[in-house]
Length: 346
Image (cartoon, rainbow, N blue to C red):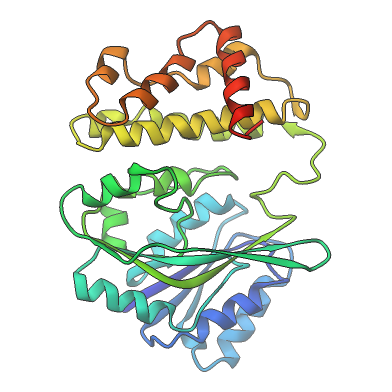
């Protein structure tokens, strides 16, 4: 039985510089029935000390709960622990250096209740922070939509590559859905959230999208999602992401008969193409280097040509991406370079 309506779940690792601002924003929520669940991923700074101080000093401190990992296990495992430990009916992920507006949870819970929605997505603001402290802000806003019929959300999410965000934060999610579908994050540093969020449309039917900007996502130079100032990138690091997306690619059997299969296949294969182009763009930094055959194999399709030919949606784009995976390696990589440069990816 859930003892809270909502769990705000935050994995924390060496977030001392920003965690107080993050915690202030969650503790200022106008919605009252919230558990503030922190996963201590065994960092070496004062992040958790700051949170413990808030447990004792803040009026809502009694609702702050800290669970500690046995050792540093990475953000994927931290999120898995948060799913397992949550006492709320709904789960809302945050990163430890971001903030939310005071009305965020109240707004999203109201939308969920009004439509009996399983998931509610709200809009967000991306704030680029330079080393000098200057900021540049861009808002990413959803239209107001209620997607409540069978496959309606899936077809919307997969129709365009960026129709639905890749990160798992700023989504109010029924914990029951995550547990029933055994949603688990993989222990990698990059795109671990995308590998989960891309399959959300295969698990849920009733979804609401909100145009309200409720989340402030800070992009800082030293964050995990950036390769800035790197002179060497280990191949193993890139390959973890390749393997992660490969798991998605080869998991199509579960949805072979779904109407959205062509659109999901295209989105996953396009992601593989973006990864291949990133490798080509950073090829002088990656050691050891990728061979042409390895790059071609990244683009191997999980489906045969005859299966793709039966698609009633996204037929031509799927066939084009399929081509990269069956051409001779040298020709495949040449074509990737040409297309990648024309798209501004290389």
